[in-house]
Amino acid sequence: AQSVTQLDSQVPVFEEAPVELRCNYSSSVSVYLFWYVQYPNQGLQLLLKYLSGSTLVKGINGFEAEFNKSQTSFHLRKPSVHISDTAEYFCAVSYNQGGKLIFGQGTELSVKP
Amino acid sequence: ETGVTQTPRHLVMGMTNKKSLKCEQHLGHNAMYWYKQSAKKPLELMFVYSLEERVENNSVPSRFSPECPNSSHLFLHLHTLQPEDSALYLCASSQDRRGQRVTQYFGPGTRLLVL
Image: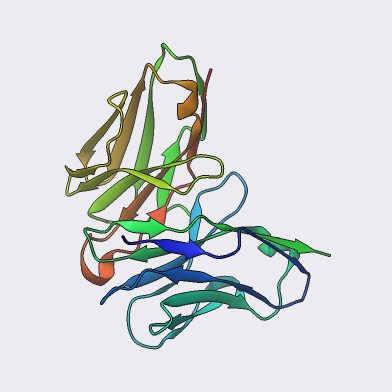
């Protein structure tokens, strides 16, 4: 079955430290990959996406992610986090089945001063 | 972000009420989606519309009734809801449902509380 796994439900980190949020998906020939961020009481905002081309994708707010086909992973990274990055982050995968997105369970990033 | 708007942002209703959620997208997209987000659960896709035609209904109870009068507007009509229907309801749109135009853009959501 198609699935997306976010390996960490909560990630606490100090301000200005680097962070990596992990995402793995079930294997498929062709996938499109997304990371979304959700601030409290808001909708989902697109951070970045991989559709094709370079496997290193840069997004908004200084985030980047790398598509690794052999490991079926799409981990999200930021070299130095800010308090304002505190939010929930969702990884999502499209298996090109009528636009349907499969979402992970979410990772709660908590940045402490 | 004003690409996808949702009204109301908050709604409290009794189990016997009838209410509607509205979603509008200003992006010229052809596909629209309703999701339910409950606490500590993954996002649940409820309905998918493509060019105003419903193309997916994920076993959603009949007390939720979607309507898509045109490609820019999507409604979710609610009646005789249960307390477990309390959640954040998110609307999204995408250019298309195939190929590389599947990126979905979300609205701010409607926080629904059923008493």
